[in-house]
Image 1: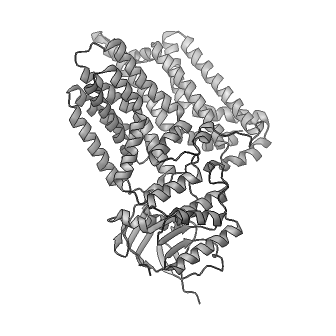
Image 2: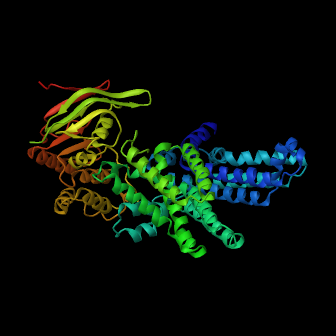
Image 3: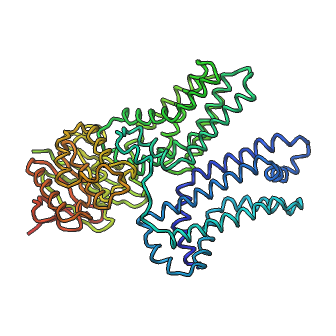
Length: 378
Length: 213
């Protein structure tokens, strides 16, 4: 059983982390960012509180209902994502051998091995579970850790059962055609549309999550910030935060290009043409935000905020060249940029910010587009 | 007659390992068959010559430098890789259109290749539904779109059926007759109908010509 579990972890677990590392890192940074810097910092008033800072942080994490809700929502999304990943991978020809090797083992052994693999995939959630366990022992309140334990066991068992069925009971070769692929089949697909199609087909969860952040920001604007003294600063800060959320999609675009459209580098298209194509993709992706800005702000402010968002997303896309496919390096660059962009927005320097973003984006593209070290990460 | 492909001081490293180190080499017009062990750097060399990988040194064709005149160089060269990883949801027709637009190609010429390979039936379907052989045929077809004078073909015969290999042989001979250059890597001897000009071997990162008695 352990041999099988090790192999499953190596093949499915590790490749799942590689595929979804950016989603995971973003979630962790957003959640812990919220927990650490907003929830706790805003609640420590006592002068002596620094002595209990570590303890307060822990309390704030576990006690905040918003934090718990966000954790469970992301946890379920994460579990679904991991199941969909194994489901999709099982169709790959490289994984065909499982169907005539693993299936010879008893169902119980397979189930236990998949449970271990699923627990490995849930490692980030186990960290949260450890926090709730510490909380339970310190405070003497066991509901949260109980809920987390039930969550872990329930999702692990469901995942393992699903995977055992997938490889033993499922009749392969009967899957139908994707409706969107069938619908778009006769269309002409110029370069900027190819990435959007990939987004619609393979990255729906990430897309909805990012657009959800935009919608949330517009809702906050409508409910709390409508009478703000400096609407331009508010709009620009909103745009900068939206760039940070969209950077996740920009990174996916970079990886998709590197894996599946790498051959475009061999075609006689100028750097300007390819840069224009990336920019057009970004523009089409951001049309809902453009409509939102025009709805909530005066046209001049709306256009400025949109340009910050658009140029920021184009810059995030080209930052992928510097990160060389590493999500951690990419996120570091994005957060460094975010600090600069928010300062520029607060000091009301939107035009220099837009110009700087577009210039740096083109310089990066021009410098690195044809200078890659490897081809097609398979 | 086309110009030679000239390589000078070419060096390629992956991490700390130097995969290629070629002082100087000229590929003459006609077909050159490049051999070498697995991992010797054959595919890397073709990817460098195609402009897909960064490297140290110089590559030029008739004074057109790969780095300095990136577009002019790419108009001359086409590439078909060993195992293409194409976007699975696109159809063969989508990619053919993309290549025709980028190379301002004559569509009738593409049609002729499609007929030869018997590809009409599946080009309208997404690549995810293709077999390995069908993807290989598509990858080769894309390399022949337009009128490049230099063909870089990485393992072109693997997964092809015998009929397709014979057709590919005809295409290659036609290009050689026109004075074009074909660089081909293969572990198997190319079919007898193909006129091989030079043979060379990559060993310990260096490229050397093989003399056939």
